[in-house]
Image (cartoon, rainbow, N blue to C red):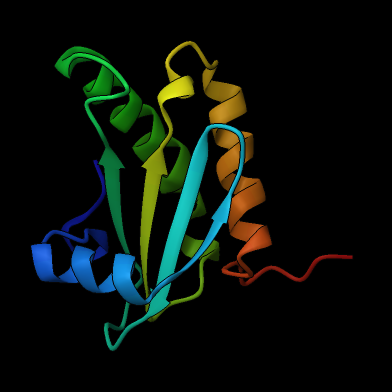
Length: 116
């Protein structure tokens, strides 16, 4: 579970981010992000019913949360970030989800780390 200060929870925050944000996509995930006034990065998850029944959506959300948690210290602050799961994520191994999130964060230039 993400700590409270890192969660994007309000509907207006999601709407604003989806409407005004930039996006970066991969095979199984899409990241939508926009600058914000918050001191920390705020992360929200969007997993639609197209992915599957409730147990499958919850499983995917748990996997995404556990993959993003170790990366929080390396992310740029003052951003709202939504991770959207595509329907083909259902049988994807955890390691692949983790590597796609890492790839998307670098692609969106949200990482504090300098790349060589």
